[in-house]
Length: 485
Ligand code: SIN
Image 1 (tube, rainbow, N blue to C red):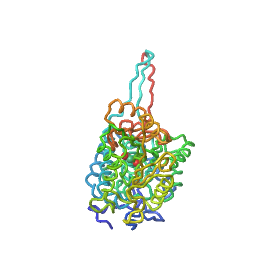
Image 2: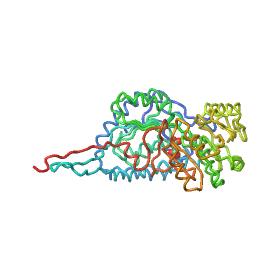
Image 3: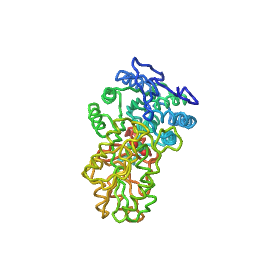
């Protein structure tokens, strides 16, 4: 048993219709840092997903009738409880996911911020009055919740990716059935316990964990009771889920893979660029969709930048996330380590030079050394594919046009970063980059108050910001006739 202040937050059963439900089977949740078992968790499947959808469908009837203010009060209470229990929630996350405790605590703040934000936003889900086209008519729109929402959430942000979907859905008046990644179900289940304490009625939020990702996804995507489906994960899986949603013409939001470029121009503040590059490259051990994947440095400053980057990466402390001062935890599993190794080997075979790391770390089988490759080019898999690991891969460019062309040469379009102090260039480059999110002179941009999402094969829809609520609401046009009668 973990040493939690509130042991009741450690939940290993699924949460359906306000009940904690056991299953005939269990699966092990492993700590990737120590390879020890954290918990045996109820292993649900498609049948439980369908039951949860039925319950959510019933609960929707009364939840949608609550006023925005009533929903807001419950969500706000949920947010407060998350912050009150931040130490326990962070510990649960670090044990199942591996990220350092400070990063887990930051994720709980981030997760909570979506609940806080949408608790406010729902009170501002305005419709419109449209100037009429005929004297006997009046035209207006109202926004209404779409209905039951199916969510599939990833292991890299076990709390924030749930709240970034469930927050706006619940605020809009929808009910939710979520399947968390089987690597990290405990954070999502702990959040259900707090949602219940906050007063969320039974059936409004259901979390169903299980190993059968295909069957559970199919049950959600093909159910005609699910009005909206939302997924965060790889582009390959997203494409399949999108196909499955076609049979019921479901509304969808997909937050998929990225291949973020990080451009450093010769007028950049190199020290700040290095700090930002390390922050975006090594966050969550390189396992975020918006992590820098390709680093392009203007030739005249490339050696200086590489020297500084090497020095900074060398300072990163690798270890078990519960130990003090650790910057980089383990990767999610051994398979992930092998995949990163293959990318590094391929790059070296094709001519890249390894300046740091390049192999597993002695801390354990899921750890990989923070690594630095230079002399990388576009033929290498490490440039074309999402690395999803702690490897910085640097190449150079000569002109601004060349940098932008290289940055855009990918089927992905999630996030891009660049450093420059020239206001003309900042404007030109930000407009020319084909990405849903562009950050200049910073490596950290995620916030609940701005829209997060990609273009091209990085996804559809936006999460967070004012836009985030619209994903869960239908606009109804009401034409009022007979006004002159
Ligand atoms: C992600 O990796 O999908 C989320 C990262 C973020 O919200 O900053």
